[in-house]
Length: 531
Image 1 (cartoon, one colour):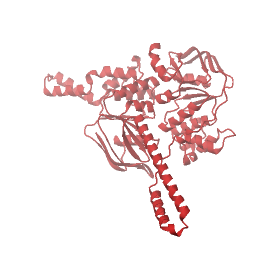
Image 2: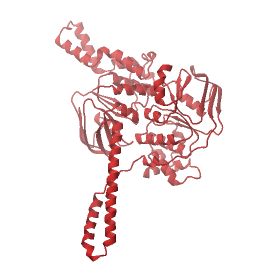
Image 3: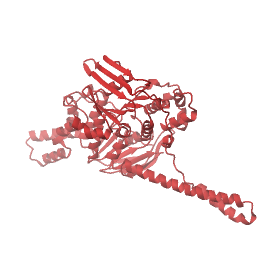
Image 4: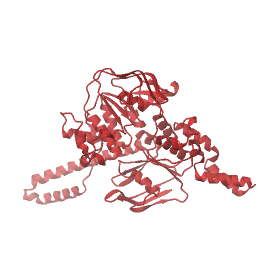
């Protein structure tokens, strides 16, 4: 389907990848992973031939139709939501018009008419509206949304519409760049199930390990300027990676043991003339062994492996209580007479559709948004920390990463511990000396999270903390929050993150909140019987 041949791409002196080759075949469902900045989205642009490679080529078989979901875009369309999914494909509209022309000219019995019908059937034309409505429902659209003009919707809902269009029409290859970014948990779960049963071909960039594990059958790993292809999902890739690392560590220990034996021999007998020949022979062996020394690559997770983040003072049992709270935006009533309580030690996810009021609830809990009526009561010894990816104003852009981290440091913490925490969020070596103003959006999010956890409050309110983080950064955050002894309320579309952190689920629906006391999997099992 697609052949990538000795492909290289650089921007000035920065080399993203060099001399990479691989094939993409029909039926492959590929997860593309790698640290941020390694060129995953750039590879998509090269496949789409939107940009030119520095060297090499991408060969796309004739007739291959590619659908692309970018991570961020402005979706331009004059259609309504349903019309975009039923009338937005040029191939189908051309064939439909040809079919109508043939019918009006009494050519409905011709061979060409049969060929047009066959092609329309292949493209799914005759089931298009039914399929479109099913997909829109799964992505969280209500029937009342079907006739809404797309250009009057928010960017997030426009991206959902674009995703729905890509799933509705027949594409030979889908390129999906973080497809869950604009979805709520329910829509992400629906998409996971849909792609797990998908019969087509796709390449997907995602930081959600559970999502990747459930929907892919191949994994591409892009790192250090090269790419590797593993036959298997993300979980299988991690197993292979662990096995290779264990093998390398065993080889390293055996080689190190042999080197030390040789060094001891040389040290012991180097001054004895009758051992001179043996000493020379051993030195030659040592020199050769140094040339082929086994190298175990650093594990980015080791920076947090045995490290415990500073713990917090314990709060009272009642952390935050809402009593008879109401909140409206104009004519939209989000909450009326809401009673809600967060208790000490809960690590709770707010589940519910986009627009249900999850972010508003988190801001009310944080005291950022005032309530129209009712009371917000903060409990004894409660310190609140609030994170949102849009709150980059909490950073001093003129500071270096290290200096900005130090601004949150309590008096007892030394530089080594600060660097360890920064390393846990993938700021290693020279990265700590970067100015905050040159950081990407994802890097700024990581820095804000690192600052929160350097001297953590005992109540964390987190709104989509994993967006724009790569797999290793999500792992670092999961480990930190598992060790954290305070209280957490969070919103996330990341299934792996939610499953790993949450011990309670609060479902937000129709201005009310229902508590599911248990894991996220317990919530998935029980939610339909409650709704």
